[in-house]
Amino acid sequence: MNRPFAVRVSNVSHSYGTHRALDKVGFEVAPGEIFGLLGPNGGGKTTLFRILATLLPIQEGTVEIDGHDACSDVSGLRSRIGVVFQSPSLDIKLTVRENMIHHGHLYGLYGAALSAAVNEGLARIGLAERAADMVETLSGGLKRRVELAKGLLSEPSVLILDEPSTGLDPGARRDLWAYLSALREERGTTILVTTHLMEEAEHCDRLGILDRGRIVSSGTADTLRGKIGGDILTIRSTGADALCAALNQRFSQEAEVIDGTIRLESPDARHLIRQIYEAFPEQVDAISLGRPTLEDVFIHETGHQFWNE
Image (cartoon, rainbow, N blue to C red; front, side, top):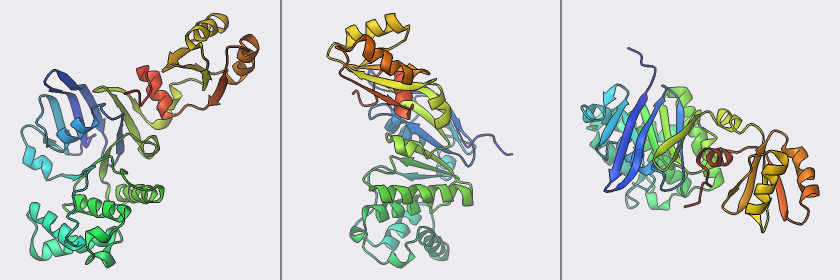
């Protein structure tokens, strides 16, 4: 039976002592979708990743991946997922092929079947000619591709990646996402990514914004930006609180002070710039105007900056 989802997370909560790392998190990922969990460090991404990868037991809620329940069918679920960790998991003193072979043994692959899977995996990521190279001789981008090949060796239906662009230069990041997009198109693989990078989040079909253990908003990047309802004015002033109150009173706006800077969302933001300068010439140090970004969405939904912690 075809399911409308490849991943379903329902009311998942997790605590470390008195600290609640996840609080009733829930979302669904459609088959063949690239879904991103975007949030700052400390927002709960790593805990959720570890639960999805079956490295942490579920305290509250349910997780189902490709029809397998994370509580009652852990072995079945593990057979359907591929995992790429943020921290390197390669043995740099082994060759590329040896790393692949040892990983295949963990999935019960041996002999001709394993050899064929390794050859196919290395060819797919363009490393067939580097199979005999020691991993320590590879660039950061190539090492990341080997990590991906390992994660795909068992032909998982769902690939889970934790901060996949960590340590990569811009060119290697582009190559990584081109490969992930091709993987989805050619094999229909469902891809779930955790990230703190706005640029990386733009590659996802849909996003869940995670902050302080909660999903505060979800949707496509364009849908999320559409919630702003206008452009963003950022105003710097030595008397930010007083100026913010004056702006709200004079222009009937809903400006707010975020970390010492006035932030104002308005569909008429361009015309407001001149009016604000004319009304408060001595109080305004600088004004900038910008189209809404995902970081603006985060501020809009949480009331604080992405990196305020």
